Image 1 (cartoon, protein in one colour):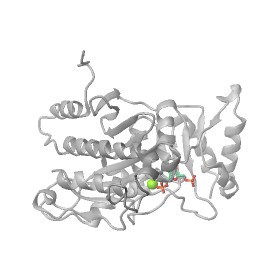
Image 2: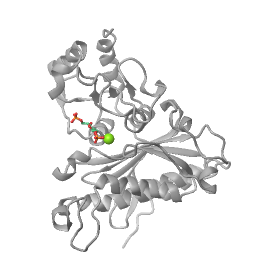
Image 3: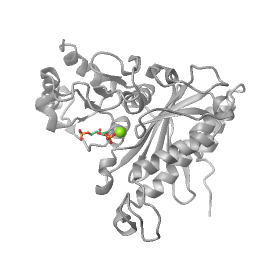
Length: 338
Ligand code: AHM
Ligand code: MG
């Protein structure tokens, strides 16, 4: 078999990147590779999701007498496990856990980073075979190394992210991560079980034809957001259209498509939930960082998502993210909201 040596694996790529900085300790590269390992384990289980009735329902005991865990709990434990046993992470925050977790041992207390993640976003879609994903965000801790990390390490604004990424478990499994040096995408090659660099230096097209929003909530949105959605529906050849509405209800899939092809994704506040649904720390900030690093923008309707000073781990926010020209047009409607 001919091995294509032009394609770099995730490990080769992160090591290559690190070599460009002789003073780098390799902690971030190691952390990104640890996340890749957990993603591969989660991918195996996600691919078996349709067999759950055969193997045993989550929460029950399967035919082999093993406990069957809910996939989001399984994913949480995998990501937490690799980060705890790695050398780079002092603690984590997760959508699945009420509070942040401090890895209080000597190596972890001396580690530079904390990580926040949503282990399996869109997990309501698992049993209908729709793409779901993992989202994560990496911060350099503020507390001094040598002692356990603290709550302040987790409540940093998104503009202090060092890296962020997502894994999409879809028709193929992809790992996309961003640092201040750019955004790169790796596709899992099942033949060798490695993520391979398939989408180097991803750029979000400045404009697109797709808008993604839950239309079912239309009458609960602010009138100026409704006005913008109406404009999207009326686009034609004379003003950059026609637009297409695409919304699968799994943010990783919706934002991934828009990142690659151009588009805008919106989860505004509603009359029932003025603060929106999505979580700032492990859903919106990472996507804001990735999309901005790729040339797009993200806001909560009033300010840049990454400039929000978080006050709680599970804080929610309205979220608008996407191609820069489309975001600029949306802004003209958001500015009308008092
Ligand atoms: P989850 O974290 O409970 O999975 O919820 C987040 C998901 C996002 O992936 C998706 O964009 C959104 O919820 C869909 O919500 P809705 O069904 O209200 O449109
Ligand atoms: Mg989620």
